[in-house]
Length: 406
Image (tube, rainbow, N blue to C red; front, side, top):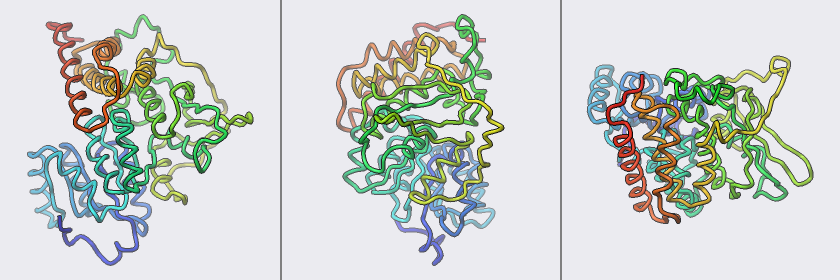
């Protein structure tokens, strides 16, 4: 693919960045950080699913060479709108175009911020192309851990985690390997239902579930935080990122979300990364690594924080967290089933087809049907993902035939 004319001599002195999932919360935060450092970075490509207005506004501000809309009708609308303002941004359509811009030669860095399994293929394409992959899509490693890490290693890619927890761990680990590390302490807020009576969780509404107490996130990730599946997926992701066993990762509920995660060492030391709950901090860290740049985030005021609380997670309240530990121990097929069933369950809950407490029931059923072992080729990963989604949809159909959650 030949580049269009959106490149200037100035671009040669700055890093080209492709943002996959530009209209989501992480994508928007990424563009905010980039806007603060126009001398260091320029936008090569922006992608979205079907949010035409948001992507149009971003294209007008950042003038990418390419814009991708997965939805073809949305791509036509975007192209028409850009034409009316004289933009020479080239609009591409379809899921395959995500892989094209993720591996585009003029992109140095790729922000992989597409939520869910849909982000796997473009994230993998960026790794295979040897990019700096700033990974906000945890599902990529949950579904294809070994395959993805092999792609990073074999193609000379750089992998920097964007999740605040994994970024904190990355900052707190030794420069090389895990020598001297005793365990990883993965913190989580506990979400909005940490202290709610368990007996009332079946009455939780989507509006309540997406109201995270600390972070501003998309609906799917907010529900995952409420069930603590988000933390379960992060456990699996951390195992692959840092080459540790799940038994070496301890989840710690920390309601203030001030400590983003910690590393415990064999000499008794614990190193933690602290900061205000703002995704721009890990984004800026990953963009500038090994240097530091301004992220637009306020300095942490310890007198304002005043206190830090910690407690162990309750598996009775958060069964999804236990399922994630179990899935990683069973193998890759189970992890794929876990992720696929969860995506189907969360979507069904948000659309009021199942209750909040039926999310873990659906996931448990999918895990029971998943084969043991780990797929080593992409085709097998995608087949298992499709089969687990079919199984999850069938569970909903069989168990909720005439039921609509109010």
